[in-house]
Image 1 (cartoon, one colour):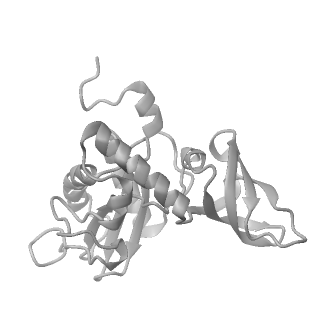
Image 2 (cartoon, rainbow, N blue to C red):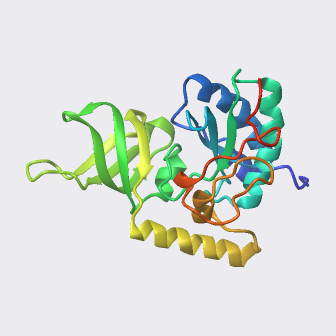
Length: 244
């Protein structure tokens, strides 16, 4: 029998599902350090983003294999990743660490993300032009196949009168994908969050986690505010960012 920290075979398979989009530079170094540690905890890495906010902010997006995440998940992951990054030192300058959910209008980085996004609106950018363009606004209507060989069945929202609305794009040709924040997506996210709340009495799910990004062990905003308005709390010595 596996112990409480050992993922079951089915969950382990989900945890090991590869991402189809990868970071570069500092973000790639952080991702390479954090990815195996997160899988050991039972979480999946979604994306790592490095910004110039407050000098430097490293944002790490995480989720469970079913696409959900809550306050306790972010706190648990942060308590492990924070000292790990201190030891590995992927960057030499001071930085702020922020743990968060992918958000409602999440980036799509795995085949399972696209399957869960069926019937929702998304923005896609391809690595090479398709019919003269690289950016598409679409409804995701289906996914056929696995991995980079999977095919996306799409209906273009931005198609002109003389363009074909129903198209198929190979997932290997997609450089970036992200859900569009719509009323339908918000309603579905709220229903999922309510179901999770009623089912296991845990704290707010994905939609609330997006509004309140995590910034290190136990350091949470005192009230719910939009994520883009939150200034990340420094991790390390009180009153200052990590020092290198």
